[in-house]
Image 1 (spheres, helix red, strand yellow):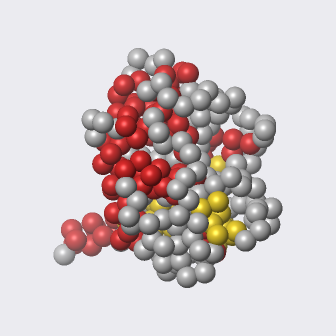
Image 2 (tube, one colour):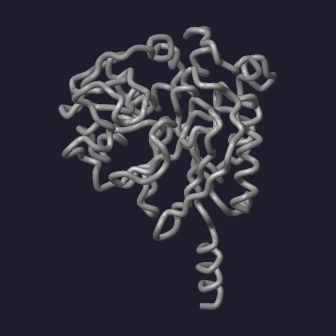
Length: 289
């Protein structure tokens, strides 16, 4: 009995923190972890994706998160998929890309192998949270979201993952159908998990708008505000949307504080009754544009 009680007490001290988009801001991540008093031997970290790109230390960030092993989980973001595409010779060189250090690293192959084996959706039944990088379409319940995530994850982890990587860019199709197949199906799934911000009321995706709510195309709304969305009773942690602002809306916790742009790097503790938010003010490695 004494041992069981001691074990329960020890487990109650294990913290789980979800952290917003890092994008190569490695020094700020280390400062935030010090602020949280993160214990690498026991605590757990959830990363909302976009570990890399535009910030100054993408290679250090990637190596650090990989080195955490099973103490951390990260979902894939659009910049992470862009890195995988660049590593295979696909995708455009974007103006603010800072991926060359990774692409020229001696452990590039090992890092790319690890990255493409990360999930698109992480669900923890005990904590009662799911995590994605960007969003979820209103037509999906949790079972469908998990199924679609696993489908594309299996493709990325397969020997023929390049079949998807080289054709993943594009905004179509913009509406979910269970009859979607092949590239169209994979692209829709990837766009939902890594790029989504706004939807129409009928569930069609609007992937071009990047600003804060109120500035988008008429008839569209944030994905978490679509009436009748099937995951409205599920708590979802996400990043990707720095102009949205941090906080909880309709059971969705927004964690991208725009660290890269001189905003904040954000963490929220999930293993407590009421989420506990922590922020670190950042100098900003980039200027918007």
